[in-house]
Length: 53
Image (cartoon, rainbow, N blue to C red; front, side):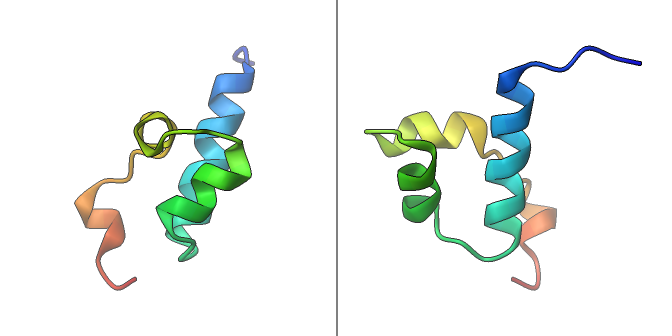
């Protein structure tokens, strides 16, 4: 079994929230980031994943 780190959990949660329709600003607040650019690092979602949202 692979190793898991808090970074992976934060990335997974952020991606899941975005895919569920939560705005990037709300995800930023949820993760406790001050700047939107910090959230974008954790919440990278490919354009193919956004189709249909």
